[in-house]
Image (cartoon, rainbow, N blue to C red; front, side):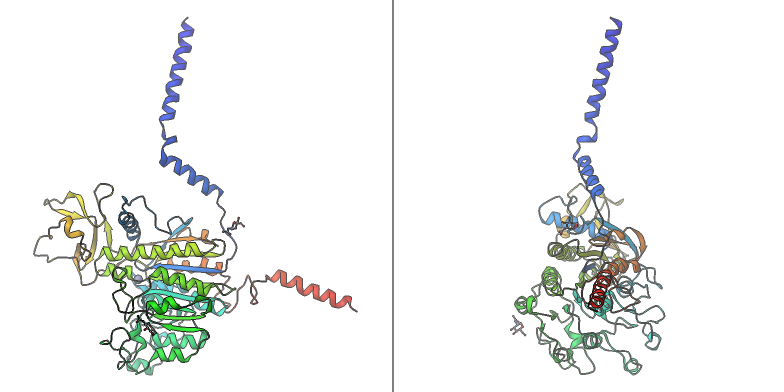
Length: 524
Ligand SMILES: *[C@@H]1O[C@H](CO)[C@@H](O)[C@H](O)[C@H]1NC(C)=O
Ligand SMILES: *[C@@H]1O[C@H](CO)[C@@H](O)[C@H](O)[C@H]1NC(C)=O
Ligand SMILES: [Zn+2]
């Protein structure tokens, strides 16, 4: 009897233990999702052979905080809580972190960082495609310090190349793809003494590049003013004149190059009319300066294509080259939104870039195209607490500061949102934060908010994307891209894992030669 009771108790205990088992996390959706992802990762095979194309997306100034806040903004815009959302690159299988500092500055600028991730060498702040041996603004010091970008190396190897930017195409980030200068500000002219020393402005370098290298196939962005003389009126805004002091009309110079199947365009209707199947060279300057913010994209009389539309057209043109292509797409105005202290503008620009990445995802084969999404540097925007899930991302937290005042979720460390320090922090209401012109508050009042010095995330999928793991110098970012395109900076003009005729491997070539040799001798 006693033993029976003992057995019964044992069974009861086991039953309780089992009941407790089923109460644990095994059926919890977070846990089952985790298991699903674990299985995906266990079955995942990295692509360890070269592809034929690379697309690099640069969210200018897209800090990790910007990515998180943009994800929430995107969800809330679509009527969701937001936090659980996903931007179009967040499912990529590989991520790493890049250290962004310039050789001479702790917090970097876009010129030095672009030289790192496009040319593979860190350099000083303000330098475009030259090493740190060049001193900023000093032309003679830059002699012999040029470094090739991956765009130039791809082009020399016979690939098609393109750049899409929402900034001026002569601005730091796009400039590094084709130009070399010790001063990023020399976009449309150089001081007279510098000209006599032999340095030329970035816009002129672009035209020269077209002449010398056979041409960038697709260049879409803003910045007509540096391609027009001071006496020339702008085509879209007749009250605005060009900024070139040398009297040149570079748009005419470009047309006179007579590149085959080429079009220069400046408005949406002309952009829409471009047939990518019949176009080898497309040059589009859709604004006098930077392109409009996405929030007022169709403000100008000529209209503007979105970054997603430009990306689609660029891929359609570039992919016609059987040897492949390199494309860089820059969301240049995330940075400008932040500099203005406007989280709203920065986040709308980020979501617009996510739409462009979505286009690339849909148009490319992950076995063939390495897609890399990253930023050049961060910004000082922070995301503080505490507020309930789903709280408006531009709104106030649920808490009060020690003086009993409301404060924001998103704040800047510095910038235009600062206040007169003789007065208390301005009082805020949720109503105020809904205004698209609202500026987030900032600790130090500056005319322009600054970059920050934190690492940026790198997201990648496709050939050699698995190499983007860990924490490295930003100059590493170009290496897997070079690998995916079989490029070697020491052998410009060649693709080391394909022969120049377009994809026949050296081994296959050798077999062919031997076969011919044997046939030749058999005939004797
Ligand atoms: C767009 O540009 C083309 C070519 O310059 C021009 O003919 C056309 O009128 C422009 N359209 C608009 C709406 O400005
Ligand atoms: C990519 O390659 C793998 C392995 O060869 C293949 O199973 C898969 O179907 C390919 N994917 C596409 C989209 O072509
Ligand atoms: Zn930047």
